[in-house]
Image 1 (cartoon, rainbow, N blue to C red):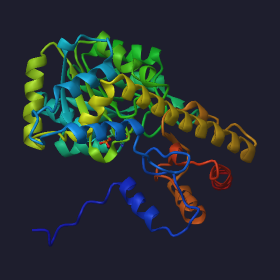
Image 2 (cartoon, protein in one colour):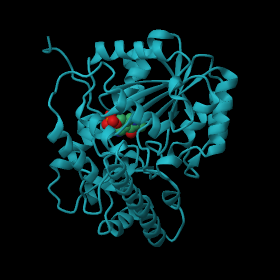
Image 3 (cartoon, rainbow, N blue to C red):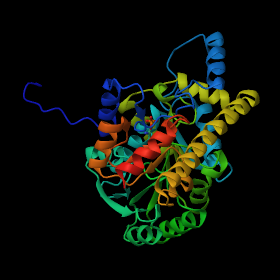
Image 4 (spheres, protein in one colour):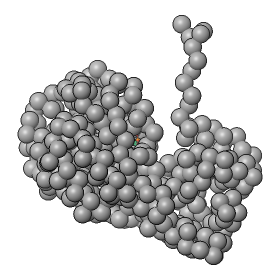
Length: 391
Ligand code: PMP
């Protein structure tokens, strides 16, 4: 069956991971793949996660199946973490998924089944898996302007002008915080404008929340999605615990749907889980549930997450300052204003190649930089290389 098949090109980020692993240079710097790294260059298991895992190992007596939507306690804990008091529990349907990717997939597939004519609006640029999943499902998609490369900030007029063309039942895909790849988020006034636009057009927001806690803090990062949930009858959310709990390989995600028809929505989500993977993985979700429902573990987790957030913000400030020194200009000042792991550095694909080949500095081809990959030792070298190559 496969003899005549040309396998699909691997995702550019996955390809970059392979190239980095094969590079023998000891001072190579990985600013590509989207994982958090400590100042020592590690992607650690968080202390609260270790403690929760130990307790689960001690007390767990069965690995029998849980429900099709996973443990309701996990869904409830995630509802509180993301939506807070924005809407009552009775108006939020939920289901566990294998990571944030599957949450995105389940939302898009639900909408495709229920409203096959709907267009999904995605930001330009966005996480490449968004258009990939939309295209795989055969959905219609359109892009909306989002990033103003000249100023390194939000193109709010362009965004609102493009989205004004959305129609009733269309889905507007928004990044909840720490936009991937730009690092530029809407301000609260922009979220308000988006809520008004959805109310006016009948388009439905779909918030992809992969980095809560990496931007301005757990509560501040959820302000946009909470504003939408308060203002509108229907909101889709796909959330990931990969980054903020460091549970990447355990695959922990959740779909939340703000709706007046909770029972029906949960039935759809359960059926979709059944067909795509049956039961969501339990271990990581149980870890998250235990951390969020225990004061001591929760406090330890929040403190460690805050520390990670500060490392990334510190890396941003340090690189922006080093670049100010290396270029004699404030051209890269936007780095310090952006949030989360990513920024677009403004490098062409050719410049990205030179940075990799000549300097051992790995960026994604569109010039996306993961600031968590920087270390104090690497920052002066990275700044000098960027100043030279992007001059
Ligand atoms: N959405 C966005 C925007 C992301 O950047 C990611 C992680 N790369 C995800 C969703 C999903 O991550 P995961 O499936 O690892 O939880």
